[in-house]
Image (cartoon, rainbow, N blue to C red; front, side, top):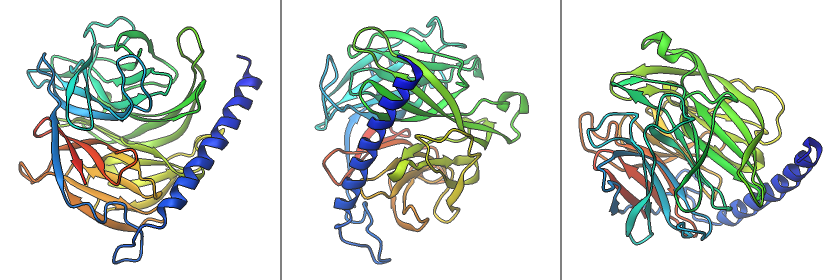
Length: 375
């Protein structure tokens, strides 16, 4: 596809998609407001239901990525959720190779098991929070691998078909420790927004460096043949990142695309949420963008998603709480999702997603290796 045709197709599809998101947000605006006067998506949500174990037959643990299947194709069923595992059965970080599929009622099975020696993924396989499912049936998941407990390479994005078979990998293009991801899916074209946490991190030996990036990868999805990266651009940079004896690595994590194409980023090291305006169309690096909110109830936030009302939902790695933030920076609601461990809830939460068509939130609990629903 020629660059001019690609740009025109992507632009038209993106405008329609963002218009749809704005309409959905306007409809959600009719929801009751919380005591602070803001419509809180999690306002009436006080119950947690354990839906399923995320441990497959090979014993992988530490569930990270969460992605809802948008349409039925192959072994993917609309409304199901895919969950990626970061650790193997021995609980070694950066060695998980499986993706589990879970129905809304909690039935679950192994969707994919990836060869740990996968050719084309520098350093091996350790599946991260970077997980998305395109409407075309392609599943894309990030890998940040380890060997002997140490980070062993830049990793990659692994592309699987609707049957759970690995078909190709994406490397280079600025991909370096892909940690989380969201997608704007336009059909034959998709934009992947990927956070990367290995730019100078290992060499710094535990000290914080400000090399974390956000990439926008424009992927063409042909009717026949494999998807391919048509263009790549760094749209965010300068985020804090460091290696950590407990978490392996800490850096920019969750990303969520909001109204008008604003991309929200969980700047985990700084316990803040930043915003990159015009993320879909921008032609230059915004640095860390502007700060939406910092501190307060945020405590090493990791996974992030934008709710239908336009608010940002994020989960803390430091204390097991979910925090809801308006696009204007008001922290309007919190919910404690896990209180195990010491300090309570630390290290338990990672990926999350809004349950389609419902006022409810899916999330994974690393402490119990379970998939749960806040409703």
